[in-house]
Image (tube, rainbow, N blue to C red):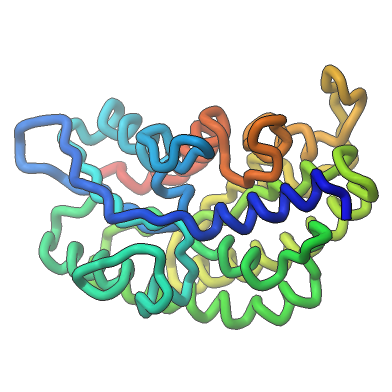
Length: 293
């Protein structure tokens, strides 16, 4: 196997199993806070390769923007965990993180129950580790057949997560769940057979995102269409990238807004600082009308 592709697979797999603990409460003001509760995987804690968790993820950016625009005393409670799957979020079994409550979901439910009427909104990103840990092959292929087999279970667990949060939060608390950008589009032109891999992986990624969209919408959460912002389906539009020539728009954005195509962190699927800001913008756009009195 191509050595560079082998490195990519190892990095992507390692990115699914980084350890983390629940994040602290942060409040910019002195008044009684109104809370933003965040759940998720490594994206929720702003993971950057070489740095680990940061305060530059989409959750942090979104919190700062909402404080500035709408809720000055907004406090952030982030219980996210790098490496989390839908199963480990629910059960706590094989979770990379330890929660006194037993699981990330139960920690979130307990927080909501302890703060009735004080939580302004909830965000979720979960599911990517389910797909990559099960369906990513050493060749860089994400098999559509595997994604199709996984989809019903993924949808059921994501639905269970939103249902539990909704019941604990009560009516009127917006819950927003994101689908995912596809960093594996970056294989285009960087490894032998990369074009074919990018197309094949996108077909599997579509099945994966459709399961998440169905779960969130069906359970009454707002779908945050990060995939659309990254134009992951657009192989037809092209742009010129220095050093690479003319490539599809979706490939260019996967490389521009994640670490996947970088020389130092080749194959790392996490968003870079710009990518996290783009994700935060999509959340902000969906959240804004939900926070209007």
